[in-house]
Image 1 (cartoon, one colour):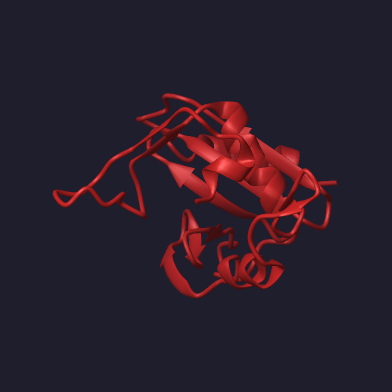
Image 2 (cartoon, helix red, strand yellow; image 1 turned 180 degrees about the vertical axis):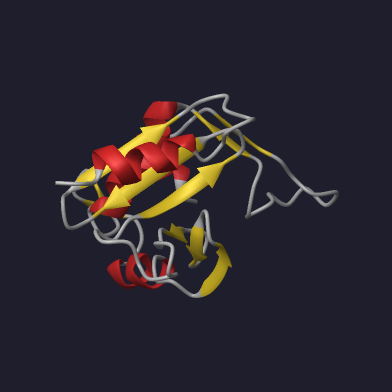
Length: 139
């Protein structure tokens, strides 16, 4: 399991009727644990000098595969890839996880940056994404 080697002990993950965690949504984490996942992603699958997942999986999961919504970007393997208005990969390349109400883990390898947002922005869930795109990940 991913959480044990990251030291994530407290979480809630919704399950289906058979007790299987729902992979695409329903995970509740503390902000510092979200950051641990971001650090592992930024480090190519390594956390505290221990390989957790392969670097190849990191690369493959953060590639633009399916275009979804112009406001969000494209989807990889459970990671979103930020795109611009022309559906081209945003420069710099930012991939992110997004949760209900404005929860985000955003990673930019080129600039060695991770941004974690926790919020209750149910009426403007994309605000953290716009802030990161317009103010945090620019030079």
